[in-house]
Amino acid sequence: MAFDPCTPTSSPLDLPQFLDQLGAALGPNAVFAGADVPQRNRNDYSGLLPTAPLALLRPADTQGVAAALRICHAHGIAVVPQGGLTGLVGGARAGAGEVALSLERLVGIEEVDAAAATLTVLAGTPLETIQQAALEAGFFCPLYLGARGSCAIGGNLSTNAGGNRVIRYGMAREMVLGLEVVLADGTVVTSLNKMIKNNAGFDLKHLFIGSEGTLGIITRVVLRLFPKPASTMVAMCAAPDYATVLKLLGSARASLGPLLSAFEVMWPDYWQFATTQVHGVRNPLAGDDTPYAAYVLIEAQGTDPELDAPRFEQWLGGLLEDGTLPNAAIAQSLADERAFWGVRDACGELHQLWPRHLAFDIGLPVGRMDEYARECKAQLAQAVPGCKSVFYGHIGDSNVHIVTHVDGVDEQPKDAVEAVVYGLVRDYGGTVSAEHGIGTIKRRWLGHARSPEQIALMRVIKQALDPRGILNPGKVV
Image (cartoon, helix red, strand yellow):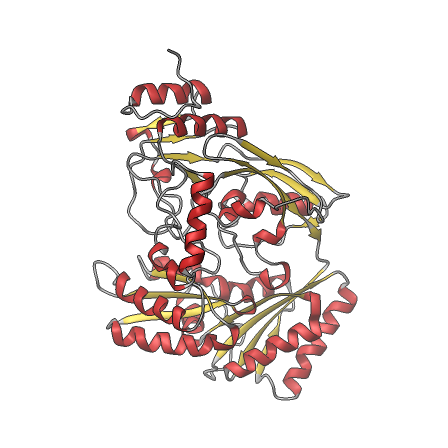
């Protein structure tokens, strides 16, 4: 009897036959098994140990993704979607007995619609490619991440990525108008909507954005585009206390309005690390050795260079004159802008200077962030002898990043550090994940940020869309 990929089977897996079926459906150079699975597809950027997937699938189009899922669904074989593999929470790691499904061949810009100000793209396309295509068409894609050269847009949406410009443009979710998604049984749901207003029933795309590939695999995306900035102003400010940080944030929102595109805060521990230990980083406030309570990078982008720059300088100058800010510097060139951002982006060097460090991505009420940072640092020092920690983040949108490291140990004290960081997150009414997702690393802490009723509802949705539990099992819930 011929194999029917739509009919679930409970018989033991015949691996050669299973791989042959996948090979026949996906074509040459699309199925790799055992030792032939490339090393890069055995892990993500979470720092966890590599895995040994049953197979790697590389479909070339949506129909290939659908065929792969139909076959895997029929056999009850778990499928783990993979994009650029830049995730930090173990969400793209396929374990033994699971199939990794890479979207690396689903790349390309399908359309830029100037009238609708949209861009339609395949889900495996790197974010930087999308940004460049938008610029060439006279538009701007504001999603901005450190891994933009290698992360894929499908992965960005699966975790509802944030980045540096959330304060103005929102999370990745706010930039999406339409999606094409393949469900667990291979059903293709296509809704490449380009309209901002479309209230015809449930807005199903939001089920899949942020679900980390547990409900469906995103294959195509319609993104909103924005006007290309004609002016960019960047400043680095010193704040004597956190109250000044909050006052500066309120003033920036009131005085700069829609020009405000980034508001990044660095605590003194991070500032010291970035400006003294990272090669090539220049201190924008060189010559001022005062130990300030916080350092704030502010970016504003506008459409009129003749008006925007004077407005920005007048606003910041007023804060210096009235004593709100003790010191600040405004970038005078593109090189200055890059140097200022270089301080904030120095966190990318932590993996070299602090090998196998622990990284956290949390959300907190803005008014309590400094209180949290001080208490967390103190508790870490007490609970984990020798623990070093730095704090920085996107304060304007409630997001703090924490990195910890203990020198001279074979393995970082993960459980002890997480207990402090996430225990305080629960106490302060925050979230264990602001923009990186849950994956496997944060799954046991989900209850610190979501109620039992919310988690139960997540499981109901998962069961409805993936009754055999084959999509990215063990992740999120």
